[in-house]
Every structure is written in structure tokens, then in C-alpha cells.
Length: 60
Image (cartoon, rainbow, N blue to C red; front, side):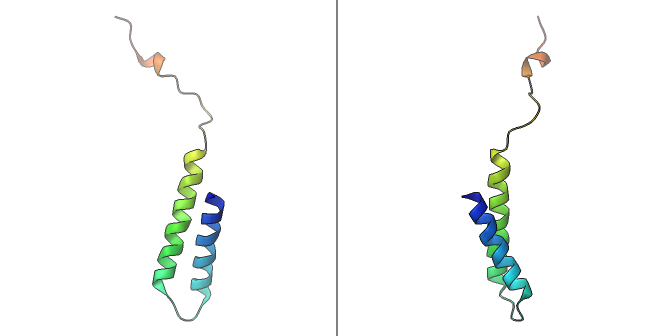
């Protein structure tokens, strides 16, 4: 799903940047779709390091 959003955003941006008549609403929508897709991809990637919060607690 996020790959489709990224592709739609990229197509909208590339087509509007290369055209002679600029439609800034389509450029803005393409940028928003591209950033949303990248955010969705980044949110699903797990961290490589395992953060253990137990080591930061002190014994009383």
C-alpha cells in the first residue's frame, strides 16, 4: 500500500515538474503523498538494536 502511495506521489511530482504549465496543487499533493508513503514505510521498519530499558533502573 505504501509503495503505491510513494509511486503516485513521485509520478505526480515528476509530471508536474517537467510540464510547462505548473499546477502547484498537484505538486503539493504529490509531495504530501510521497512523504506519507515514506513515513508509512519508515514506521514499519524495526530497529536493528535491541534497547533494553532494564539496565537503566537502579536497585534500591
